[in-house]
Image (cartoon, rainbow, N blue to C red):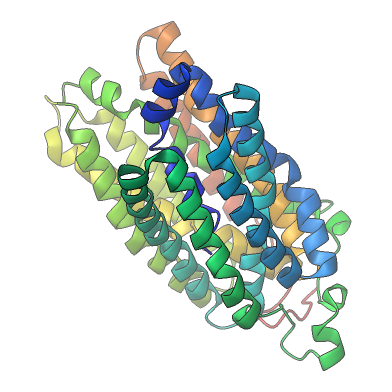
Length: 389
């Protein structure tokens, strides 16, 4: 589970060392992250299809093995930028095999599926925090080359655990033969899914929701300065959001298990909209630090609550048959949103010399997601993947 998180978190620490050693600019180094995200986005749908056809176990175990070897090979970089981009692009491709984990959870749990997905989401945050500390310790003691070797060894150590304990997804009443045939799982084909109204409503809502959460992230410090706050409050606000996000994730998992409709997401989207409006209104002269921190707390809570919902909705609307491929298609929308959000906010500031119009646009986008969730139809499958329509 931590295999793709380890090198991803390490990327955030390497800019000073690698740019100084190879003479790269910060911009040139930053394109490595773009290669990681865009290459991963391009293969999510085809890799998802392969996972659905050949099974989760061979793809995740094989992908983890290749990721471990690839990360170790990254220690041998010569300083050519094309090589740097190639390594991170390949990591984005191979690391995408991890999309099969959500399918395992969706198949293993019925009544508590939302809670399980919530725990999975919170665990990823904890794993990310641990990965950052591990990477930093290796970097400080063994340099960036030794760090890649160490991370590769940790990832390879996970492979035997996956071989022993990772379960292949199966429907609740599957026969032994069906357990070993991923194509026998109940649900729609990917072609059928993309022709449903529910899929596009969920995909558009996810796209509109991810942009506000990612778009302002690199701009917190200058935005707060423009509102009369000291830049140090950016860290406090992000910390508050992170803590309330964990709480919100559990609340969201509990809520979708208790609810019989996907409209349960609407109130949490309304809270996200309110949080952005609060952030727009907050300034040193109006509301002060209290309103600013409250906006961050509400934004984190609401965003955390929606964290397990898209995956849960896929299981209840479309079943398990093409679960990973469908998640991959939506993942492409998410990656596009993550890639364009921050530059769009920066462009707004460069042109208008204020972040406020961008924030009002975010609030409008989130308000639209409320409407989309309210218009979603009834679930197509019950919790045990029996068709209801």
